Image (cartoon, rainbow, N blue to C red):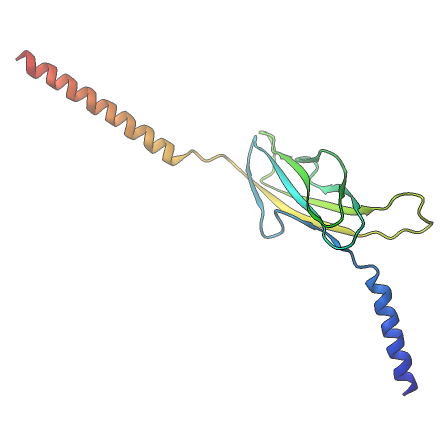
Length: 173
């Protein structure tokens, strides 16, 4: 009985300690493993990661680092702050595929770490998130629908010209 009581108290104490490490913030990525970003050579896109801080009453600051894919991906800045109770802080990641890029698939790995204000103590604990996704690069397809409309338009112009020429020849006879 005594061992069970000690075990229960230890379990409750451990739960309370671990609960203090839970983070109320999170990152919502627009692409992830299994849901890649499709781009063409010579194309540039901006992808927004959503920083959320919905629980608690303290603002958080996050530092973003590109661990992989920095040859095509870039950040405007590296530190972003989300106000308490908000879910609309965007972290824009610009992806530019050069025309002479030599890969067809490029992995992009981003790491986000909470940044604590300096001078608040000797040991600080933070939270971090890592998100990754693939960028699949391909040649730009010729718009089949545009090509079809051009052919139809040219055929219509030729048909109208043929009718005009036919009527002119018929009147002269």
